[in-house]
Image 1 (tube, rainbow, N blue to C red):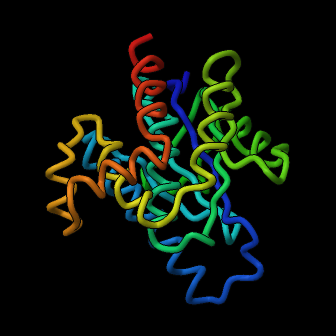
Image 2: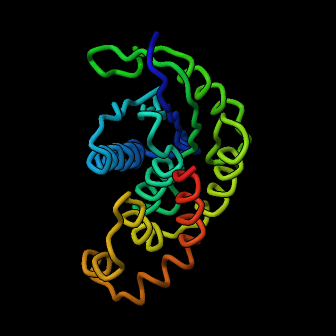
Length: 203
């Protein structure tokens, strides 16, 4: 029986209005976010473009799907505030081919994730097919992250690492002051998101 995994299925909001260059820029940002997550977790995500303006990744079940979803949102938002992706999270069996191409993969996690994305209301940008606290936290996370500015997203992105850097290190990397980092994180609602992620991952 295929092992249970987490699948994130996403698509770009209002992609038909994007030029070819902006669409490529958005998908490149998402691909780079997947590479960053692979580095953080030392695990393949098999980032795959899906249905033209869509994408998918697959995670081990012991990793945080919501942390990954926020990483994708921050990576995209830091490029351009007008770029948005919806993300649906599901858990279940998966069968990935040796090529790693998720378009050729199968399993309940892919089915549930796709169905959840299709059922999402237009204003919702993160949804979790699992019940309870996971679904509730995803709902709140989408509401908070929807308002991120590029500057806030740039501050949030490195802080989403499982072993996160100090604010001084982020400030140095971004060539801004520590106070600017702190203000950006507060304005982005990061302290509350970080606490929620900690509680979910410790459960």
